[in-house]
Image (cartoon, rainbow, N blue to C red):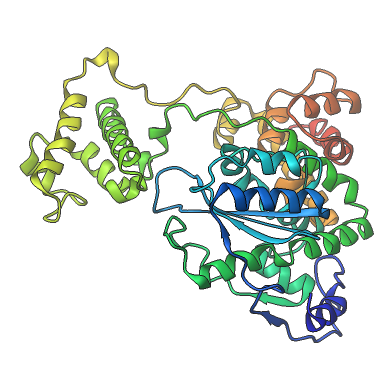
Length: 426
């Protein structure tokens, strides 16, 4: 840090339950430049080898971040990777020019990686060969510590007393060459990440939550890659309006056609055809391109060839035999929606009401969001099918079976035991 940065940081590492003391009035300091300036973008094997050697020889945790081109390109690949480590400085790496970063990942594999909202970046980092064995998630740490705002900018300001410029977070990071202001923004994103980690570690320790946080971080680091979603077309925005199976078939055909085009052109699917247009076509079941062109999303700007490709997809759905039409919903593997519990199982509904109230009160006492204390899905599953003997050991075993961490089991088991034993409401 510069002397000014060190002074400001020293005076601002003073969190108390997620907020500075009321009697401290310190204006945040704008963070305008990385301490060593904007590093050159690494885009060749020789430069990458130098970075790998430097980061392998560095000390302490490694700050890691990645920029994607969500809304512009197909998929969630990384278009810039930023790292910072004591003794190595900051590195900006172009994963388009250097698509295999497994050597870098191996060089820092035993080191703690510091990320903000790790689950957002880990999939795209995994694609280029970077997989941490240990990590510290500053966003999750902020949630557990009770901070009301946990975005990186908000956390850096409230914990370290600096203001980060966040104007380039949603730009098209696939742009080449990347403009200098974007590179400055990217470098600043990892500039204070380790400092933020250190301050949050102290705050979590002060609150008695450091071991809880470590269990959460370990769970993220050890989690397997997520399975591909089944029937992703069902997540089309506005799908709740589509009731009939023939209409669902239209959504599926249009969605899959759009996805193939988007993947071939490497653009965001929404830039090919909007979800609103897909749902409009499904509801209308147009018989020809003239009828299709009259619908929202298929207007005068769309050429005849485009209209024909979409109409062909609609026609395929219209021609399907009934046996090949999609079913109204995906197979239900868990409890029914809570709104249906009162009719299906009043006792379960009473258990869930008591459990929700107890978990909410406990989360408030612990100063953290309910969903970080225990997932709502876990509470629903335990309440819908409670253990035959609702004692502490049985409830703890049920929570563990649903993936709860030891700290969550320790905190939540007593309140769930009481909730499960509550008599049904009259």
